[in-house]
Length: 87
Image (cartoon, rainbow, N blue to C red; front, top):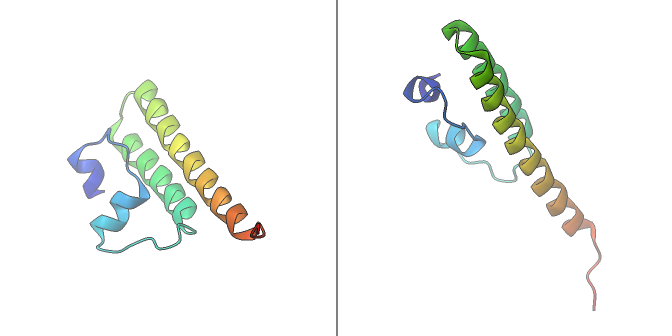
């Protein structure tokens, strides 16, 4: 909640969350779960603050875009690990 209290419209990323708790995401495997928590927390925060719905929808779309980018990066990395080395 501290991140939202600092700027309620910022795009909170897993990196910001891990930095706030002095930790590191090593393989990004947990990032989709962290993004789910960010979405739930952000929705709850803005409901409590009675934020304007159009702005909340826009923010959640930005978060969803971040999740898609993280999933794409994770899938590309997994595919790269699975592909045989060409000699």
